[in-house]
View: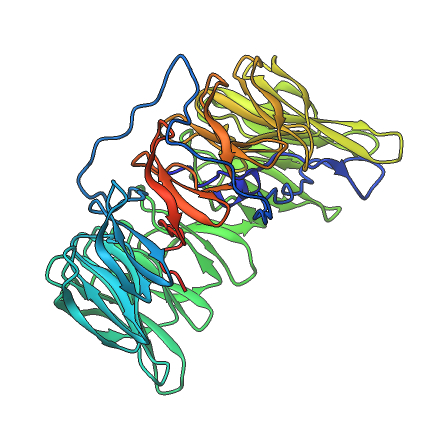
Length: 551
């Protein structure tokens, strides 16, 4: 995947949030689980009055390894490439067209707006105020006569588009990826991506003005009439539906098999169980006939994980003092680990779960328990994340700052509780749900929200010094963007070597196909993984995937 997290501040958009906050600001003692996302660290747009630095296509410094550009691959709807079908959009003098990998115009800049060729042979363009579709030769497949034409998604059945007429009415349909012919006429208020079962969600507004949801097949035939307030995805032959704030279930034909009666409900798992929330807001489980097999007696249920591989689910109940306490239940609803913990997380694949208790002062401390509920790593941490698949977990220790507040320091432990990385960093970035560290080889660390960033390996060795004010994640070609104190951007490899010199005012990060959009002052170009220009910085814009239409 493309390095979408080029800026450290954008890591949160990929669920890569900072595990701890810089200073605890509130109570005199730190409370476990209290975190704040790192403030966005943004590479500012540079406004320069001096002449731009001279750029050259030989921007690669000597290094032990130089990444190899990717070979052209067949269209992959899941890939995040800069070039689609060998072309990408670019603009010059207020008009958009399409360039190839040599930077030459293949379709001259004559459009006021243009999409990339995301799928098959078709791209959306705008001439004046009218929209149409072209093929890779620039020929119109749909004449620019529509008031609006937008791209939703692509799947194996076609390209999902939507139109908006002069009255503001939006209609969705599907066109053939090659011919541009409508396979499903744009007649639905919404038509989503087709699932593996060949069904897609549709929306329609009823006579009372309420939005109702149903399902259609790949020919546009209605399989489940749009009469529900909500519909999930089919799972094991059934899906939940919503009717007037209550959940029930339908089968693949759209027939209601469990009447809408629950406050919330989840998908059916392979063992034929689904969680529900009853009239009194308690959580329980039902079977496919709607029979209650675990009473709705739990005040909390970890609905993201439910039953993990060991057959246990995190649940909680309110104790006699009105506090929520947590434990683990089995598939019969019996407590396997009694609800005695002040907080807890789901079990990881190594059979350990983070759990917290309060000390005599009320301070919450975290450790790790095994499947018997016994602490195998004592509760001494102020924050504890789940173990990732490699058996490492990010923890935090809070130290007083002398001003009545606390500073959190991150470290990493192994499943024996030994420090792999001592708690000395203000930030160690990981997935806040799975605990997965940012990179398979390296760990992104920082010394403060607006400070310096670097990378360490999984033994705690500093590989890339903490000296960069912005530092991105590594793209598939093994390069990460860095910004120096002069606000210039270059690229390093995983050995910390500067592979492409500091020279750019803005970069888009490398895409899956090994190309990167760069900016010098107010002009855009494209470099390959060697730092060579394949398109000189002479364009007014090169939107790439993230700015598919220039408005």
